[in-house]
Amino acid sequence: MTTRARDLHIPFDGIPGKWNAITDVDGLEVGFVTLVSGDGPLEVGTGPIRTGVTAILPRGRAGVGIACAAATHTLNGNGEMTGRAWIDESGSLSMPIALTNTHSVGRVHAGLLSWARTNAPQTMIQWALPVVAETWDGYLNDINGFHVTEEHARTAFETAKSGPVIEGNVGGGTGMNCYGFKGGTGTSSRIVSLGSEKYTVGILVQANHGSRHEFEIRGHKLGIQSSAPCPIAENPWLEKDRVNVTAPGGAGSVIVILATDAPLLPTQIESMARRIPLGLARNGTTGSHFSGDIFLGFSTANIGSLTSDFPNREFSAEDMESLSFVPWGLMDALFDAVVQATEEAVVNAMVAAEDMTGRDGHQSFAIPHDEIRSVFSA
Image (cartoon, rainbow, N blue to C red):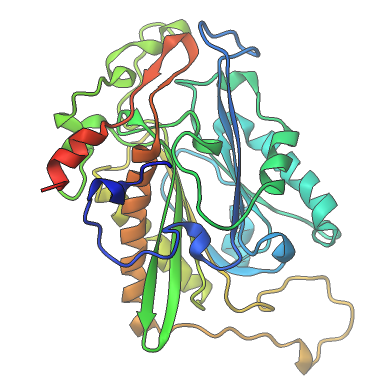
């Protein structure tokens, strides 16, 4: 079984859900395709391949096309997330979400639409604006080889399910690095009590950000204290592509998906998404210029609201829609949950990751578990 951060006695704040994963939000499903093959020198179009696709169905297969209240936020815009303009305009998300590498956004987008055409054809009658977001895995992966195909995207959605979520070197996070260690996919959740009601906040990260000297866990500077090598920051590994260039620390990006079953307005979800950087900052990042730090949040409550279909008759009172929502004065507990789950999801991604060797022998080393245990076991 994959090791998670709590297995190493790290004392995180808050109460996690059953699986301590984004899938603790009822109905949400996650799937992966992981592509690892080849070794040795980079041959563009041949490999080595260290990449993949992560698929997220906010309401599961049956709920594709049913709108969720949604919002986005950007800490630094050196990255891509499709579909954002419509989410920001309408405050809603009705299509699936995919995460992959920077140069595979187009193929994954096409594959997602192909999957929806077969599995949710009603969503393709008018228009469809799915979300595909990326981080850059070119240190380990033949990123210009375009190895992620439409079929890989379809498979990721076809295999999506509820339950525990695999972390580390998986899906879109396969070839990613975080704080100079091996990074990847991570998740966490929190249960929030508001009076007699309980709500879930789930986070999934594709963690590919931060510099080694920044990294800390719960105030302990484990980055600069680590014995693990950090070749991504120490070697001029881009010489083969562009002479005398070394990638600056912190380059890479992080995508964060925030899900909740709390009934919320789109503006309240945006406020929650603005707290994601506070969770990231607990582990040290200051938001590098070369890091695209982009976030998407949504709520699975209020089914039947925020629709946007072509009208087929004259407007009547029956067409009115409404949203129930948590009062603004009670939002602090949800903000806390976002910060706590984001912090833990990043550490989960790093703890679950394993050492990886990729293109041209480039190496990325996972953070040693014994270094974490030595700090927190006491």
